[in-house]
Image 1 (spheres, rainbow, N blue to C red):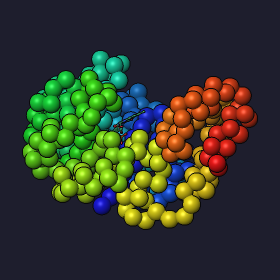
Image 2 (cartoon, helix red, strand yellow):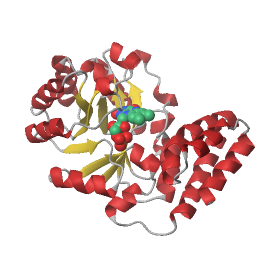
Image 3 (cartoon, rainbow, N blue to C red):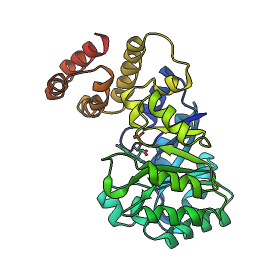
Image 4 (cartoon, helix red, strand yellow):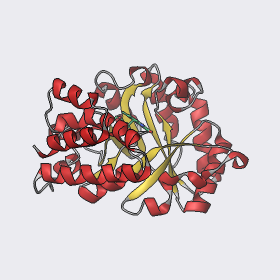
Length: 308
Ligand SMILES: Cc1cc2nc3c(=O)[nH]c(=O)nc-3n(C[C@H](O)[C@H](O)[C@H](O)COP(=O)(O)O)c2cc1C
């Protein structure tokens, strides 16, 4: 089995990824949060730190791209390859955020199977790069995803990641495994499953339902429990709280090295919604922590939870 770190825009940047890899094992590969494709004249990829090779030395990292114009993909992939050496790319057609969908990007392109096919056809015929897609069931209807999947059977893709929700669901409700079953049966591509994989129990149920899937992508599950990948692979060892404490301090230091205390605190507060599960904080305890506005106080209080 292979475990992938999911792209979580605004969270799993290279600093987050590297602090995680240094303290926990079990993660084999990752897809970065999305980067926008453009035509060559408008591309400025020098500041794409998230995919600088020196920031991505630990595990196989695949840059994720977002856009809808075939030529923009070719231009961007060529430039990223020439400057940074990447040979595999992933296309995000799952993002459900309204501004993205309105511009027919992310999940907004899913109702238009012709447009999806045009990008895949162009990339797979005009570039030598490995290409993969990360999708949902559809934007509004599961029939959208099925149509896309059937068309993609004709192209040499590396893999397809499926998050079995509709775009209109955002992250609400349960993943629709009945629809996932249909996609599982209709594809000839390697599938990676992504969605609400939060525990060993979840994994065992999914593995039983999808025996041909070897690749599992963890997103919010790894935020709730950084040792989830180790637990799924049966290689967890040591004292979870001690190890979390090291990881937390490393990640905080990475943040402080690059942004001011206020931004570090804002980022950590976002993550404490997930960490609260690991440390079993009550809603009141979490609210108390989130109300603190002084950096020193916030960090001390959060460390008390980590160490208690
Ligand atoms: C805050 C957040 C940001 C996300 N950013 C991206 C992204 O940049 N690219 C992408 O393909 N998916 C993105 N996703 C979707 C996740 O990669 C994943 O497919 C989804 O959260 C379901 O998996 P999970 O339940 O393990 O988190 C994002 C999800 C969240 C919650």
